[in-house]
Length: 149
Image 1 (cartoon, helix red, strand yellow):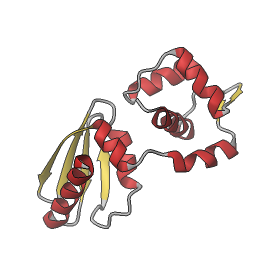
Image 2 (image 1 turned 135 degrees about the vertical axis):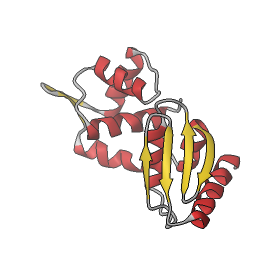
Image 3 (image 1 turned 135 degrees about the horizontal axis):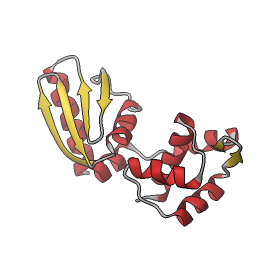
């Protein structure tokens, strides 16, 4: 697991929900398929400059902004987590390792692909909605090309 990716996921977690303790953070990372020790979480907290408050850990605003460009590319996320692709009419269905569909969907949503109307992510499956079957085929081919690179 890439350190930058793990730390990006920590920032994403802190933006989305409260994280009260290091153990809480470790469990939430595990739900995303990132298994780490308490020592690793402790180093990440220190290196990210997280602030401990009564209600839990917080990102200082400067740290949150400076980490935004460090998000892994779609190609990296796909190569690490994608296990399969299929097309069903105007949908592209992606299979990932358990707990990683959200990370892939977030990376897809950040891409400026006009063919994608939206994504829905479960635990290990993502539905990508497109306007039609031709656009779905284009998306599927783009994804397969990124993984093959």
